[in-house]
Image (tube, rainbow, N blue to C red; front, side, top):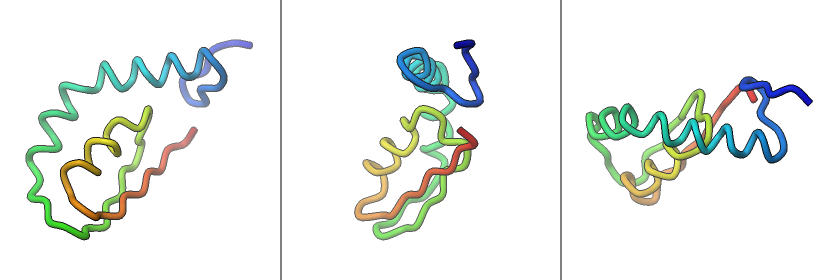
Length: 72
């Protein structure tokens, strides 16, 4: 099976998503701290990739509901 970043699957896909999480970390660290968080927010992460942004948002906004939407 050929690797496809738009539709990561299997072991290769899991590694690809982990690389996304690592490579996007600097932008995520910058961007997430420009937002004023409040408890009980509803947040939409579009293009959530490997899911690390959602994990970070859950820590930053107590008791919020966070949705992730990604093409894959």
